[in-house]
Amino acid sequence: MAGNSTEYIKHHLTNLTYGELPAGYERADGSVLSEASWTLAQSAQEAGDMGFMALHVDSLAWSIGLGALIMFLFYRAARKATTGVPSGFQNFVEVMVEFVDNTVKESFHGRNPLVAPLALTIFCWVFMMNLMDLIPVDVVPKLFELGFAAAGHDPHHAFMKIVPSTDPNITMGLSITVFALMIFYSIKVKGIGGFMGELTLHPFNVKNPFVQALFVPINFFLESIALIAKPISLALRLFGNMYAGEMIFILIALLFSAGLALGLLGGVLQWAWAVFHILVITLQAFIFMMLTIVYLSMAHEDH
Amino acid sequence: MNINLTLIGQIIAFAVFVAFCMKFVWPPLINAMQERAKKIADGLDAANRAERDLKLAQEKATSQIREAKEQAAQVIEQANKRASQIIDEAKETARQEGERLKAAAQAEIDQEVNRAKETLRTKVSTLAVAGASKILETSIDVEKHNALLDKLAEEL
View 1 (cartoon, each protein chain N blue to C red):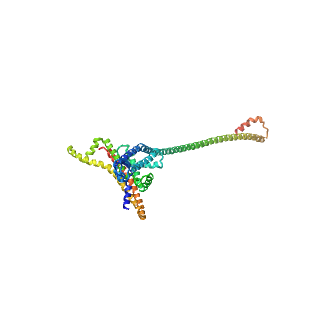
View 2: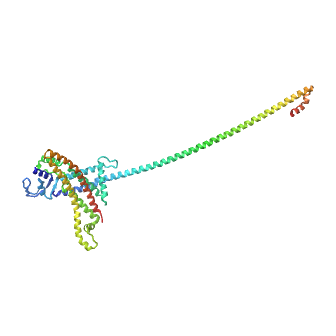
View 3: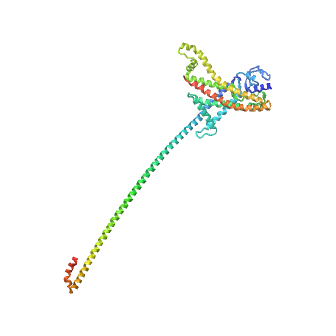
């Protein structure tokens, strides 16, 4: 049972990875590759050994699919948007747009047509990705396993993580883009000098230029850490919350295979955790959006 | 938990979605909403204006009604005045007519009296002559004494 549980958890935490394995690599099934080749990983070990040249097919597919879905729905609503009495889905979309617009107006004091659509995209997309967490952990992986087996592959290698935001690549992808925008607008608004000044003249600032020169490296060190901490904390906050939530779901799901009484308990726990998680996924999506707005607002502030 | 190409894929996808949202989703929605907000504001303005207009119209109507009432009262008063004037005139005419009739009647009466007096006088003179002739037992020459008799009648 213990080994089974470990296997189960490990299976659930492994992405469907497509990547390059080097020549001479010994696969999980014992075969040895004669030359470097692109293939689906058969185990977590293989996925790790693929290094950087690998794609998490499941994360990317779910992430892009959900993003495309929400964008399509919003696009349809936007195309049909009337100035008359709105109805149905347009109401919902307008509520979202207005909510994001108000949040941006409150927190962002520059003028930038990018920020509001960016915030809307982040909020809806992250929410959709988080929402996948509420689908019972085994449903989609099991279906995928069946399909994978039907396609003639080993069902043991059918890895499927359906919550893209439990993949640090996905959250880092978002936060690195936000970080790039921060740097870009910092330099655009304040100029290179202004940006460097911001990095080197705070927090220690003295009138005497010689003493100040001594402080520059210290300031730069401190400010660089503060700057780099922003995208990392942004990504890891979302990742950590979703990963932990997913983990709890997986642990609860273990109870289902442990008899009727524990299975029932598991059902109740799953329900309770899912209800609580509704709050978490919304909150995390909101926090991600909010911090993006705040960081970009800071990038636009000229001292 | 490996950092790999997925990161790059996600960055590209993110950039594409944001660009799409910025071009095709956000502007039409926010424009429609702003336009609607403007429409509603205009509608409320129009409603306010209409209310004000209504109040003005009501005030105008009230003042016109008051004016009309005043005019009506004036007309009635004039009519009353004219009526009493007509009545007075009619009274005056009637009085004059009455006086005229009275005068005519008086004149006729006087005339009758005179005539009666004349007749009486004639009769008296005749009677006197007859009486005198009886007294005198003489025939009096009528023609001879006619002048005397007329004179006598006149004296009566």
